[in-house]
Image (cartoon, rainbow over all chains, first blue to last red; front, side, top):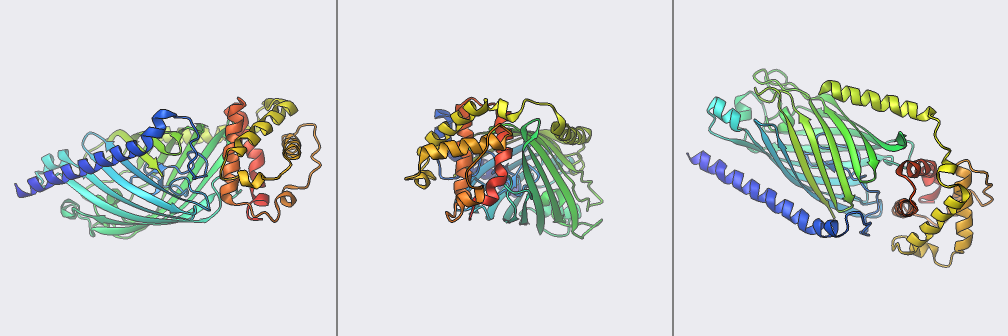
Length: 308
Length: 141
C-alpha cells in the first residue's frame, strides 16, 4: 500500500514535470513558431537549421535512440546554445517519459541531463510486483573532437560519456542485473552530404557504444549471463526533403546480459520537423522487440524540443 | 522492421551512387545562367545588409565589385562560361580571421536569398555542395 501511494506520487510528479516542460517549451518557442513558422527569426545561433539534431532519450543530441556527433542547439564556434525537451514512447505494455535539457558551448562541448520514467503496468500485473515504474537519471558530456558536419571532407567526430543512475533497482536487481549505475562511452561520426541523395541532403551517422546497460540502464547494468562492457554499433541515416523536414531510420544493437529476460535490438523510422531554430518535433515508429518478457514491443515515439 | 531498415539503407546507398551518374540539367542552367546567378548575388547582398552577425564585415566594401566578383566566381564554379579574374578564395579572405559563426551566417543568408529567388531545394543543395569546400580557405585565415 505504502509503495503504491509512493509510486502514485512519483507518476504524478513526473507527469507534472513533463507537462510543465512541454508548456515551457511551447510558451518560449510557440510564440515565434505560430506567428511565423517559416521565418528566419534572427536568434544569434548560426548553425544551419536541423544541424543540431533532436534530443535522444538519453539526452545527447541525435535522433531518438542513436546519438549523433552534432552538439545540441545551433551554436557555432563563437556561440553557445541550449535545448529543453520532452519525449514520450508508448509500446502498449510500456510507456517511457523523458524530460531533459542540454547546453553546448562553442560547438565544442555538450552537457546534458535527463530524467527517464518507464511505466510497466503489464509487468507489474503479470509478476504481482510491488512497483509500477522504474526511473533513471543520466548525466552526459560530449566533445566534438574533429571535423565539421558539413564543411570538412572528414565527418564530424565526437566522443561522449553518459553516466546513468537507476533510481528503482528493485525489479532490475530481481531479474539479475548486477549494478544500479553505469557509464556508457560513445564514439560517433556524422556527415551531412550536400545534395547526396537525388540532390537532397543526406545525413549519415554511426556510433560505437561501450556499454553494459540493460535496456539503456532502465533494467540496470551487467547481468548473470554477461557482466562485461562490450562495443556495440548503432547507425542512423536520413534525408532532408528540404531544410525543414528530415526523414530517416535508426538501428541500435543492444547487449543481452540477462538470462531471465531477453533483450532485442532497437529500430526506429522517424520524421523530424524543424519549422525554425527554436523548435523541433520528431515522430517515430519504434520497434523495441522483446522487452522484459513482453514480445513485439512496437509503438509510437513523440519528442518536442525547444532551442535557446 | 529489420528488413525495412536494411532495405532503406541499401536503397539510400544505391541511390546515392546512381545520383552521381544521373544526367540532370547542368547546375549553371538550373540557376538561370549568369542572369540568375547575379539575381541571387544581389538578393544575398540585401539579406547580408540586414544580418547583424556579418553586415559590419561589408562596411565600406565596394558592393558592385563584390557582386561581380561573387557572380563570376559562382558562374565559373558551376561550370558556366565565365572566367573568374579575382584572387583565389584564400587570398581574398586572408588576414580577416573570418569566424566559423560568420561562415555559417553567410551560408544561412545564401540559402535564404536562394529561397527568395525561387531556386528549388535540389538546385540550392547542388550549389552549396560546390561552395562548401571553400570553408578551409575562408575561416580563421
